[in-house]
Figure 1 (tube, protein in one colour):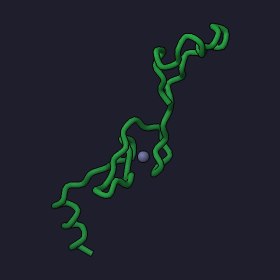
Figure 2 (tube, rainbow, N blue to C red; figure 1 turned 90 degrees about the vertical axis):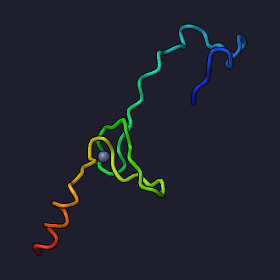
Figure 3 (cartoon, rainbow, N blue to C red; figure 1 turned 180 degrees about the vertical axis):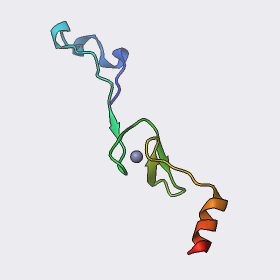
Amino acid sequence: MYLSFRDRGASTTPPNSYYEPPEPRVYYCPVCGEECHTLYTNSFGEIVACNDCLGSVDAEDYFDEEDEE
Ligand SMILES: [Zn+2]
């Protein structure tokens, strides 16, 4: 949750000893479990891949391989 300093207000500002710089949050891909910064969704908004596990294949290569089976 993000709060700006203005939203916190002077009366609710914690003492300096309490303040810790926010750690950069790490996100993990629900598909492959790897650390990631971009998630890719399908047209239903479901996560299908992240920047780490997303792959692509040329349509011609893909269907040519299927035909060979
Ligand atoms: Zn992933």
